[in-house]
Image 1 (cartoon, rainbow, N blue to C red):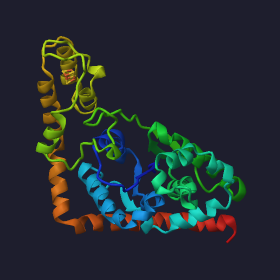
Image 2: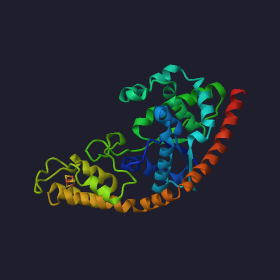
Image 3: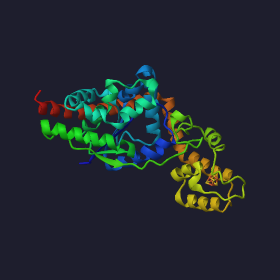
Image 4: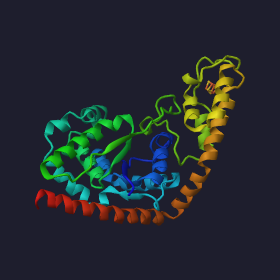
Length: 326
Ligand code: SF4
């Protein structure tokens, strides 16, 4: 039997190149080797967006469209909506009974996010319990692996601690999930800072070829290249972070040499990445347009996934209730 992988994303808006280069490419590969569950974690979005909850449904749709266009395949993976599998909430409640409060209060993101986003008022019971719900999301499918970036490793460690505590009280119900560490390349946005929706500097999966060109052409490059004849250093160039993630190795090596020898201008170098992105994303864009024309297909795919997820979640919850003695 295939080992189980689970991962999820909060629906907070359209996906950008950083999501493709980080999580999604990896998720797509994992589909052939593992039984993958990929969930849109709508309740997690609510923990920070409760003042703006009506927008979440649009974000869910956008995220599902981006996932499916990028290559998550509903015939291989269970693609579903967390809030449509109510068993996650029941398990979250049961786990919350056994978790010492300090375990949650020491989670670095709890205080950090409150500091970073004061207007969101994150000093809530729901936000404190975020890692408990995350643990429920993972263990309800008895996931063996969770692909995450470095910044999420702490949460999975905590999930393992919670599993150990549950199993100690009630018997061996859950496997301890392990991390599949995903290398998340540092992608620069169009202003040279880290690519992020909140900096308004991202290149989105849904951007048309002309928008991609418009965004990349004015990007700053290595400041050593004041004139066309000045040699540059690709490792100090924001544009090159895009090459690192999307240009095939051979071509990339040629660009490195050409940049250092000043035998290529920055505009030509940018044209290479613009073409690369537009070629690689052409099929994705085509699929995206099809889904946008027929949105019901997307909701139907999610509903199919919800059914499959519910089946597995219900089986686990039977076991959990029995183990607790209910
Ligand atoms: S040639 Fe390319 S890698 Fe070198 S500085 Fe210009 S844009 Fe950056």
